[in-house]
Length: 332
Image 1 (tube, helix red, strand yellow):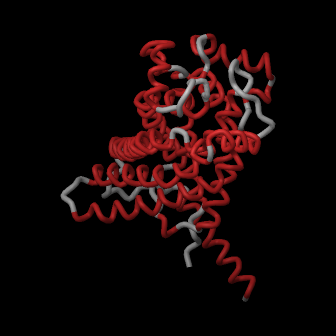
Image 2 (cartoon, rainbow, N blue to C red):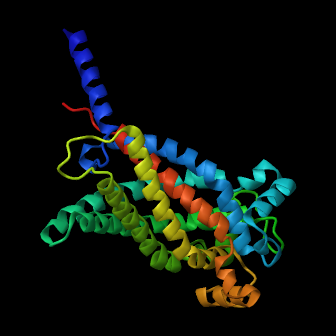
Image 3 (cartoon, rainbow, N blue to C red):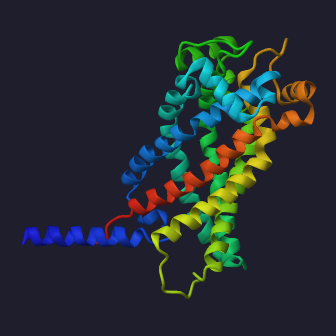
């Protein structure tokens, strides 16, 4: 009897998983939260490791005064490999991977809860389904980014300083705690929050743009393939991944074009110390960048950033949607 019940439960769980793998949208209430965060931590850390070298290349190009900033991303990558080997293109990864875990839980939870609340609230407005999806995703991206910035900015400051050590004029560090110690000793705790204002004012809208673009693009692609509200057919797993990857690529590409100038200013603000007297500011950083390289300086590292965000958008959303499908609670 017990064996039969267990077999039935396994069959139910398997069928639930099979059904979930063919679903394009799964809400927060249906997720096993523990499984969601554990699987997410594993898969997102792996994804972060694959893309980390592009972040190192982008950061070094944005910070370097001449030299690296005028080279192509691929040339900079080879230069780092020649001088520092494989460890050079993974500088700061350990700190970033471990440090990002609490922030990722905060970001994913706030994203899903706010998306569901925004979608329900939009029922009161005269909006098309496509608009409701885009707005709900945009609100969720804005809320998630705002919550996570308080945690992610100090982590960015530490990781980026580890990435650029070794460049002319940059300090060297014995590890992440040495970075924290030196920054706090010279500037106090506010030194760890360099760029917080510009991050909050720019990354939150950028996150809203990304998730809104993704939601709208995915909705439009499904409709063009004939998967409307009235259809009973379910997409194949291949179709599901292809549509979500395409929508993620579109969203990542759009976001990188719009946000690269702000990202360049933010990165330099967080890692550079040679401003003479006074505390670094957005205006000082912008003037210094324009003086060095003109308006093109605002797009330093655009190639690696475009590649990073396009690949990140594609792999992140495919990973994220897979995590949700694998975390669906078994039906009772």
